[in-house]
Image (cartoon, rainbow, N blue to C red; front, side):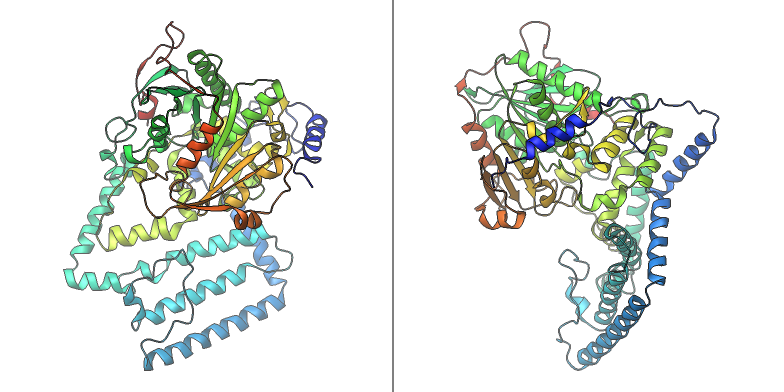
Length: 613
């Protein structure tokens, strides 16, 4: 069956059947039926008291709702109490695991080379050091892994408990176990114990100094140690260019040409508003912007403003309007040229909705659409779904209502909990027990340079795009009417990464179910950021690529991966070739900005918004 059969028509039926809703609806308007009601002033009401309490509580929980977690744990406990068969199974598993450990202990006492009875998960590197294989540390970490496996079994396969609740309980169990992991203590970590004996405790003294230094920087709002060596415009974000347009939400950077002739169609990149733009213009050797300019493309980049409490009422419609203004500026600088639109992460979701809106309204300025680590369907959004529920969104709204935005520390807290063993406890061991400092590098420094998100915009995004998945269903409004991804009629280049826990590649791949246009899908190694910053000079990269053309039948993700062409190296050259094949020709480079006073060069790149904290 062709991919186009029935889907566009079905999407249009769903879209036309929905009443129009104003995108400018406030986060306070949250009726169950999705209708819009006026925001009620409740300065002295009990609702304000609830909000104030939750806002202050959120400062201690890093924005994670304890109410939703508590209700989930209660549901798990109630279902477990009502499942005597599951209880019997868990008791049997506990006995069997104890026997396995006892047998292993006896065998290891006779033969130190005895293979362990359980291996860590592939991503768990806490017990890689050879000293863990010596007594008594081998028994300690084997007991921990068996306990960890038992608690995983305790959270899953309980009659009546839905899969999401099981994952949340398993997540909470993992946090508690990570807290008491034997790798976190001097006496039970052989590497730390040996270092402490060898250095006479000097490592712990250095670790205490590191702890106090990190604490002082955190409470005073300073950047992490070493980040000052990666200043935009001096160490990173070095590609020459000029800010040619600025409004309240963004600065538009036009990069200077590096070739005698450039492609007719420019490239407009829209990064996520949660990040500083220079993830795509890091050091010269790993800058996607510099690479594209060197391949003869005229590149424009959006640099988002870092919102403050005064921007609390900015909504998604304001961000759409800002992207519209960027399109207008590019059109004025390069008249009659279509645009290769590129969106990264949330910026890709924004660009997908914008492309659907342009197709709906007959706006033909877009030549192609490129989505980098971008989800358009949020039914299976990865591990972030553990934090997104009605309870969690309401809790976040109360917190943002109080401060006017979602703070970077509160966003970072959720991401760190998802990978607590790697992002929290491994750092604790390395920095504070071993007394060492990891070498800072450009991507790590960028990761610490996040931006805030306005109250109303983030609430709108969480409720309508993430929680209700309206964009994938053809229900999300841009302007005064909904948009449908099936209306996008330009070729799409979509990049996902194998290790992405923010936008899992199988979820990203669902774009094939919604877009009725040729899709070139790329699956590359790496994570959400490292897989995108895949410069050609680095070794060890590989990717798979395949184009699904009009009329081709849909393939499941695994079938696509088996059939896709496997290539060594970076995906950047393939992307540049794809853009070049869809460009109409070459010509002399455009001027920087316009000759009149509409879009004059305002200042040198990287501009001013990138320095806002």
